[in-house]
Image 1: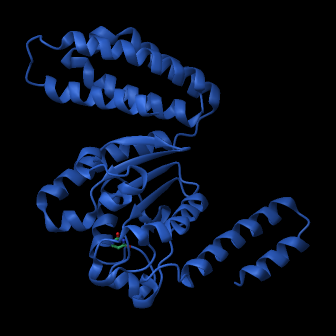
Image 2 (image 1 turned 30 degrees about the vertical axis):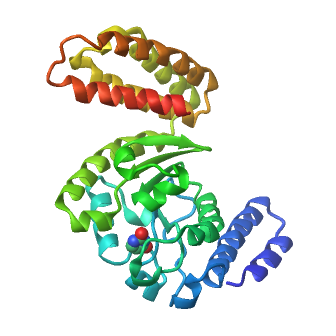
Image 3 (image 1 turned 120 degrees about the vertical axis):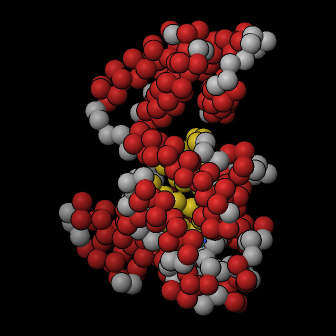
Length: 305
Ligand code: URA
């Protein structure tokens, strides 16, 4: 439907809810039209079809890829080729339904021969990408591969961020490899499967929708558990539970914009860091390196926030 016609209809509509729905539809249709007619960079000369997002908006989770490939260019839809098939499979394995997820790309037009988008192409398409992200209203955004990560963590390696989350603006971002890399390498596929298990947990927390009082109670319990047991937590038997609770709690605090608890975490984080530092130099048990590493990652995430 023509966006201008939707806008006219919205102007005639008296019911505020119906008007808000029409306005949201207008924004989506206008964005699709803007993307499909975009001539903002050289990629428009070689594309067959520009590729806007697929999936519902709003959606709780968004997945950001790199750019359309050959099939996507032909069909005007993201992730319909072999990388898309693998993405669907990985999502299904963690009980996420692709149809309920907002899927989009850093650039909307196919780079020739599927090359990586050039910096000026990424810049030219950033407005489209960010407007799509806005209309997705997603709280959790999965970044597939180095190009998607580079928008939010410029200059950082996907190998360093894979399987980890960070907060930017009012969203939680989770990084992993691009499925095309996993199609080329069984090791990458194994890593992606591992990352998707973390994503499964994160998705459960982010999608969390209980009432605020209950959330606050749970968070306070978590904080007490995590920080009052801090020295014991640095014992191999407890450290993994610490990490799970800490990351779950941080997401919940973030979801509720509970600044008091977030501040408390930042303060307590120092205690955790001190306890970790004290541990250094003591004999390292077999499971320690991994556990200290995950605990250190949590600290880093909190510090970045
Ligand atoms: N790879 C991407 O990054 N995006 C697509 O849409 C398809 C393949």
